[in-house]
Image (cartoon, rainbow, N blue to C red):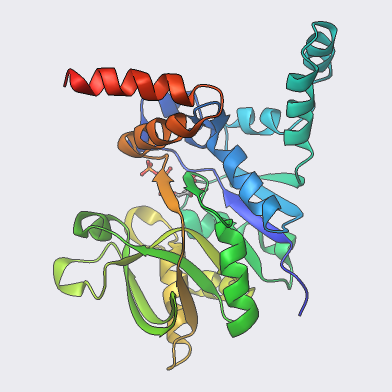
Length: 293
Ligand code: UTP
């Protein structure tokens, strides 16, 4: 089996939970300290051996393409003002992987966005990184999922147990423990009602999929709000084998939802404390600030 080298990052959503800022700034470009969410995702993919990344964008999201591009005039300005390290940093961002862009054209859900990548991924298995989910981990989460795929040869969802209020917003999985932090998945339900909750395992921003997903996406109906749900398609994958047609990995890592105001702030506070340049000063500020709360 060849290595997995392709990834899709859907980043075309409207970001209504992050209004008003998302009206002018793509939520996937919101910073965690000094780098946009998408930069963390590209690094995670590249650090996992992914060489080709397709970012699904939308009208009004040109800032994404600009970020991963060379800027000759700015480069010359920085180098001319003794800011070589800064110029090298910007170049390295653009060179981290082969990055391609495709517009979703119609904002019809995560499943619809992923379906746009069919000719990019071809007959290969591929990673999907949800564009507003930043995960900080020892080992990149993409690499963690790829290891599970190498062993089980099944599509794999990155999951963690979440609080009940988040299960209602995300999804619930019917999963059986197999070994260490790996499960077989029998079915899943997007945005479950209370009586439908099977476990508190929800999919958090990373899935490894196989081309069969495209046939399923073509065959299932659009769901709530006229959106084609990726979870509905993965449910079919999971149900395609009585032993569980997908695996789930309870991954190691701290996940932040940059598509929510609270997640955005949590990411910034927690990562600012660890930042090599401002960490110590920020920690001191926090101590003094929280003492007054
Ligand atoms: P979300 O459901 O969090 O994005 O999708 P959203 O629809 O923008 O959210 P709200 O509720 O309006 O705030 C997870 C990822 O999938 C992308 C989003 O950009 C996000 O990175 N997405 C979602 C698409 O690319 N296309 C879509 O049609 C929907």
